[in-house]
Image 1 (cartoon, rainbow, N blue to C red):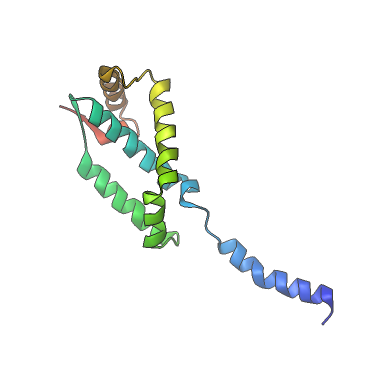
Image 2: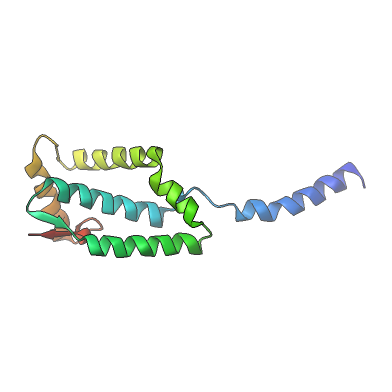
Length: 134
């Protein structure tokens, strides 16, 4: 077989594998974004005594995200690696702290968490659905 035919056959055989390659879970926005919303809501509930997190709702959503990731072809060990990754935790924390700062929240002013939390609840935002005013 000529070199060109061999290259064509090799390319044809590897294309399906490339097409099936999964992006890192951090790039699957429907999963990564939802975890981000839950993380922000958790941070608000930790720092604002008058707002609590809707933990059962968050747990239910996280189980659904796991199921969705499994349907997309990610194994439980791949999901666990993503969730437990220090690099991913650092990335999520930096992203969350930037959001909080953009919205006037400061760790030096715990009440600023309450102000943002109440606004998120009022708007019934993607973050607000994970919060409840006490």
